[in-house]
Length: 439
Length: 102
Image 1 (tube, rainbow over the protein chains, first blue to last red):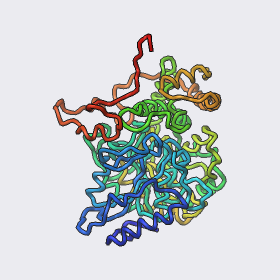
Image 2: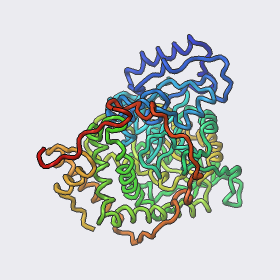
Image 3: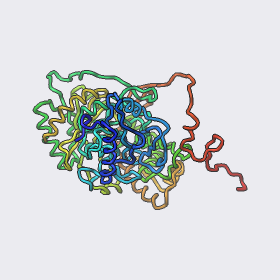
Image 4: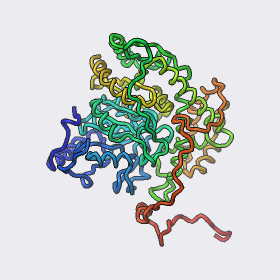
């Protein structure tokens, strides 16, 4: 298993070997869309926090003077004239960007099957989906090409593939990481996320890329050092919304959650909590996301760059049409404005819950990874897979998916903290992971 | 709320969005859209009226602006980097205006 400490590149030869390894092995998985062999090199003089650490980047993040496709024919020849803020930060810290990874087209999907360039396969079992939309980045870590990778998470697109591929996936509080240079999907929901095999590695990368940025007006920093203990005992308290997670879990996921709760009870206080409006999350998420997508996709007119929208795949076209419909006159009040009002209620439910508990726990996915092709023609069935991840994006909370043993039966367990409690969440996740790995 | 979307509406919205959808795809979309819109009707149960929000729901930020100062604009070569058809520093596009004769 690759971690930062055992993956640093120490010579030109080692970097070459890494590219050769990926070229040879990745044909089985198709996690990379492009390798940056000609744009990066080993440099022994690098001194930053991530000096000579190889990292993979989801291909909806702009790296200057290289192609960024967003997994779409629309941008297949598009050369970015600028770096995303996180790329500037990673390069300043000395990281080696190995290449760009596969994704569902414009980050829309939960399986990476919507990529215009073919799906990414799960290294745990290649007949299964890798999850999405950041499937390529999850696989780049799971297949042992790189120790850490960057993705984006709008409704679960980092946590979900992390769960499917047996790696750790972290999405910070909305606003912690700059969205400048991230190809926009749903602007009030999008956030950069990090994949890794060790929580400590994710912390290191997070501390390099986080920070307020004048180029992203929604970025902000409010570090909360110590967790305000919500109960009188010293134990960490974890809330589980049983009323919400009871239905729809597959037998395997249900079983693992049951075993885990028994073990967690030995060390922590487990509280059954209610989030009264959480059942509306999926509808609220899809309505808001569809409207924001329709707005963000308007720029692809094929004039200033790329091809026009007719080169888009079915799923993106579907979302643009629906988003345009539900935000149009006569429907905006019914759908969009109502969804925004309910979003506020969901956010307030979480705030109230965090007066009682330190963290909230849920499975990341209701089911184990499914077969490639199984859900591709059934949109609604695919959308339901996001049921446990979308509430987190609606409320802008930090969350992490921690894997049970890395095998085809791996289940991702999600821990969610209150806004700006990212450092506490990451710190305590080290303990949580130790317990999770034993079940 | 009735969630009826018909073929005519899909055609109209597609045109507004700048998308060309083939005839047989329109039928397929109709079925998928009806399913999705039916799912949204779960919100009918809740009687929350939207009020106008004057700040961002998630971040509570309001009126984030930059200073009103002139700064350098994008370099020309960057602006035209991805446009193959530029002519005399203009973007060349397809014809959009026609007179009665043509």
